[in-house]
Amino acid sequence: MRWSQAFIPTLRDDPADADAVSHRLLVRGGYIRQLMAGVYSVLPLGFRVRAKIIRIIREEIDAIGGQELLLPALHPREIWERTGRFESMGEILFTLDDLRGGDAVLGPTHEEIFTSLATEITSYRHLPQLWYQIQTKFRDEARPKSGLLRVREFTMKDSYSFDLDDAGLDLQFDRHFAAYSNIFRRIGVTAIPVEASSGAMGGTDSIEFIVPSPAGEDDVAHCPACDYAANVERATSTLPRIEDPVGPAQPERFPTPGVRTIADLAAFEGGAAGDRQIKTLVYVLDGEPVLVLLRGDHELQEQKLLDETGTVEARSGHPEEIRELLGADAGSLGAVGVEGPRILADLQLAERTNMVTGANIDEHHLRGVDVGRDIAVSEWMDLRTVVAGEGCPVCGEPLEVLRGIEAGHIFKLGTKFSEALGATVLDADGVSVPLVMGSYGIGVERNLAAAVEMNHDDRGIVWPVSIAPYEVVITVVKPDDDDTVTVADRLYEDLLAADVDVLIDDRAERPGVKFTDAELIGVPYRVTVGPRGLADGVVELTVRRTGERSELAVEDAQDVVANLVRSSR
Ligand SMILES: [Zn+2]
Image 1 (cartoon, rainbow, N blue to C red):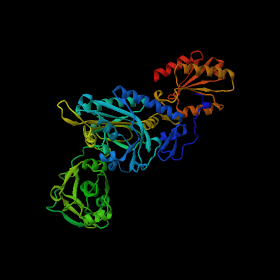
Image 2: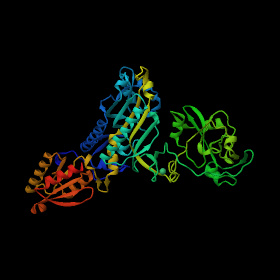
Image 3: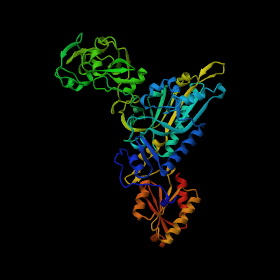
Image 4: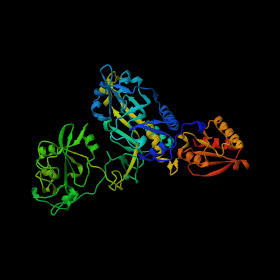
């Protein structure tokens, strides 16, 4: 490609609203443009990177037996209602009316549609199957941000496996794990596999691949000692046991004027430290008010509450609901003697005695509360958010909490979708059984952005050769010098003939502008052709990642550069 004819609209300044490095550099480098919130046009440079990422993904999924197909983005609402996900997907589902008077949905994912196709599999003899597509998804994110990292329309490779039993699913899951690891390595991102919540997918088991980055939106508890890693939506930890002092034979009420919070009560004369308080929250789970109890200094992990209770929609109780249920305001709530609502307690409260909690009378608390004796806990569950420094659940060493980008997610779905949509086969004994399914997603543009997050410096993007839009840029220092142009054009033609992706910067711009643009867009190798070097029979090679420079004899340049590119692809 000749830069003088290419559409590469680089910008001198950062976009005003860019909060992530990848957002800033991809806009400035002329890779993407925003059309509206969370919706981007992919320009020619971006399209080339995207195509290379897709090619790598396709090669790896084909290698584990994937069969590619293409399903519609437009779905009938009815099929989403049959699995209950018209409700559970909530507001992220784009819905629209059609002329036939029916409702349609723009697919945020495709479990329903693949499963409905899989009803055509009738015998165990036709299993296993692995189907995938590379296709556009739509999710109406409330707060799209960070350029390509959180968008409303994006390309995803999603695959779906169909097996007779769990052993078959385990095999397909493990193959995807390996294929995904290859994909991330080949596109130049480091992705940590972490245990994750299955969220709206349901199912039994899932692993997210998280690229550590401050631009991400997921927090991961990671153990540097043993490599335990789990999304905080699911992570657990070990805590030192707390020895409670002996308390009274029954709870004692005491006035706590002005006390509203855990911190207030810890500072209050006659109160107690956060780890000796019981925090009482009112939640509404699918319309049912419940009490959620945690140690005072612990935070609720809402996703755990959803997962543990199988709830679709959870919210905090409104002040008037709280008062109606417990008779007090949020600062004085407790569960002692409460009958009626379910009481869900975090495991860290088990066997605790002589605790302090609200008395359900404004500005009064109870001391001497023995959880087992005084509170009618309905269910014990892990509900709290892990914090950095707590003990690893595997080896006990301190955990760290990392921020990261979810670059891929693989799920063991089991039979949730096949049962809902009637996808069954006859097994070897002639018995009808539901298909055992897995689903496996990887976002194309999100990985493009993740690659930039991991591969950049203060001058711009530093693409890995494997996904660079161009592998080599030839910078013509003096486009009005005949010798320079002749040598540069010949090198350009020779590299093209050697199947190198090469861009020639033949623009009538100052050399400084060309060097700056080449660094900004991140081409891995630059060959500078100018009259000064040609006087000595050389051109200059610069490696973008290291800044390393070397001189190449004009007659060797094509071979040296082509070999360098081939060996680093
Ligand atoms: Zn550990």
